[in-house]
Length: 437
Image (cartoon, rainbow, N blue to C red; front, side, top):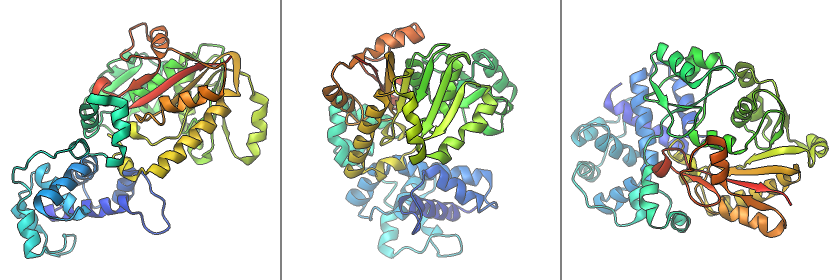
């Protein structure tokens, strides 16, 4: 592809991510890219990677790019000019070549006006540093109070980490292999991986790989799972013979991790309101060799059946729907789609799920509340709101649970687990362990 064709493809993709076609729901950026490339088989692997890298670089740093375009260069903050910025600053395309590429030909960007061309040539001129935290670290300004409340003076470093690409982490399925055996299987396939910084069952790839195409994946030795999510499963403290409820199981990644931790002894009920998403668990179970997991879609008809499990579980995990702010490195489009109203909806839904989960914990059991979020509204504030109206429930220190599960000092302070890319080299993740009266 010509440079102009790459740029035009990136512009089209950014537009689709920002504003889906009429009647279509917003989907993750990686899914938009996959669909786009599937319908354009003629685009080669090298071009796909260049286009994809440009799209995600633009999404991660959109706040900074917008500030530069509007405040320093005088161009509108549109996906067209955002893409120009990314290809010039990070893609190695000279601004003169950018201008020349805008010739209106097939698969090329439309022509620029004389003034636009002059301003585009200014993109690679050294600029002053943006004056505010949100502009330097690219997140919506309305979230600044949340970031300040969570990180105080460390907000700049924490949020800057979210503008970087995330590595690929794998969880070793200990039902089928040790970490060394899994690493050896990957090495045989030409994939370099090293142990994750903290998780005893994690491997981190040193580059990129088509995981689904690997024998180690097809044979169930590994699953893609960020190290922070591995910790959430470890903090549940599930042991062989226990009865465990994974209330918001999604596609079942944590249920699989729990089955391995329990050595395939006991029982796990994996539930989710999204039946289609939960259906993805079946082939994963088949690969993993986990035999103790039962799945149940939580629709109108199945809610009545859930009454037979009240107060029956040793461990209940509720990995609640949330803003996804902890995954902004992987899904940078999520931060620009989040609104105050949507965050409020998440808070209400999380509170309802916490109440529901609490009903299923037996008197000697534990409830683990988790969100892939760094926002205090969804983390500590949510837990404290629950404790305020559910007398007798108490917080079990997460650092103590960490030591019990991993045999080492926890890399965080306080009663809750909060992991971040800057401090822990993981996705952002919050977890709290609660015990009933």
